[in-house]
Length: 392
Image 1 (cartoon, helix red, strand yellow):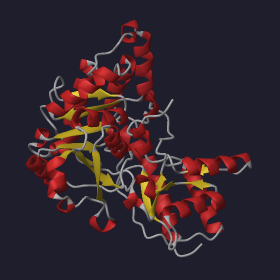
Image 2: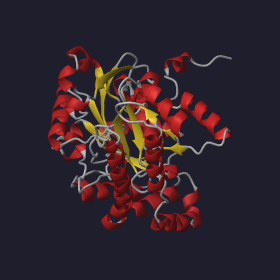
Image 3: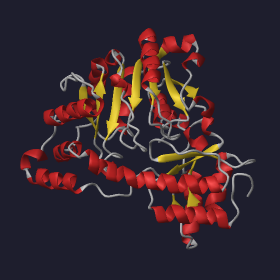
Image 4: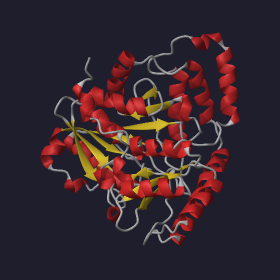
């Protein structure tokens, strides 16, 4: 037996070597602080759990769901888009589809649109699935650099015309993973104009739309007039409502994008359990005040982390959104070297920036998904062993 050759093109798992060393330290009894995984540590809110209890007791929810999702779930998603972003006239039949979280639909949209040899324009650094799914679809990923001097926004002028003309998808993700960067409506307009000109499907991964601080409210690409002509937007309830394990989300926007996604999904999955969709409808009713109380926990952690890192000389400022802080590595280290140093000397796990693309070299990512006491402890360990931005 032999594995498919396409798997040879998939880059190694981000945490393979880190996991090996972490397991060695755990066996030696080292107390590991894991700041590497963006999995919310808070419980799912009670009103969502209660809705799930009620739905699971109803035997009519035990059968196959509609492939596109329950009609009431798709309507609830459209209604939420209107309340949250002012996006009106989303047709639940043709412009909304349920998804198993975001990851599966992100992958499946590549299968729906990318032919062998087609380009996909993806952010670098960026969510690794954009690259690997291009490879699975036998396309060619064209990374576009996100640099700090440009606010971690892609410079569309750097995309060669021959690439733009052969591109099927252009991916953005704001609030951004891993950098925590945000984008304005003015920049979204630029993206829509670009994709309209080159007839590219614009894909906005908006999984962190509700994870925002200091009064900032991230926008939707669909707020741009005419965006539905070229754009679809991927939403997940994972981060917003502490529902990572529930695997529920939705995709909205361009009807051809939704049609293609639906055709793939109906052949490879059987939809989301009806009871989970009913619970997700309850999640959409979460009050702004309750959501802000969840977000405030992350904002407090962000403030502690930023202040602590600044005291160690790291040149960073507070991010306005996402669950991550993107930090430059100290002088004379690569990303992998510094991540290894933190693990071996401090028992701290963080993600190396180069795991998100070549342009992530020189950075590491910290997730705000542990209690503040562990963040204080991580900062103390770094200080105790003399790790600063300027020297070890």
